Length: 186
Image (cartoon, rainbow, N blue to C red; front, side):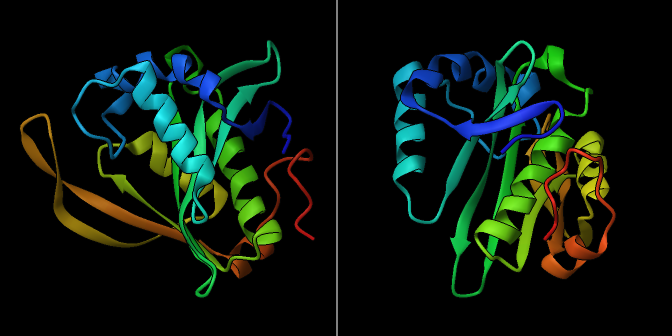
């Protein structure tokens, strides 16, 4: 899947080395639902292999086209083909690439994949209330706030709300494309 700035590709065990510094960086992981334990290359490799072998998860690397650099991951988890829904998760680990629109484009590509290739009807996610950049990204794509899990997350010594957001296939199809390079909605 290719956009104007990034493309998505399957991750391999060889990508684990790039992820280790990201998942061990508190600034990167503060918006992610990950444990506090330090991760090593083998643990990351095992996680990637587990995701790739799963029948209910798909995982992609986010790669900036120029200079062909892996900067993070995005995926659909807990895919439920009966109810045609999934949860979305994303990480831009390369902090120097934050704020450049790569997350927005990667999210649009994965949502397109969910609705057009997997024929899902709903993609949902959880985002912590302090992750304003993430919420703006998801709202640009068309995600709507559905509810709040009050004080469901602890970070930096306090409780924070978790915002539940989702987009339905019909909402995706009715919205204007983000750019000319976004995949066709048909």
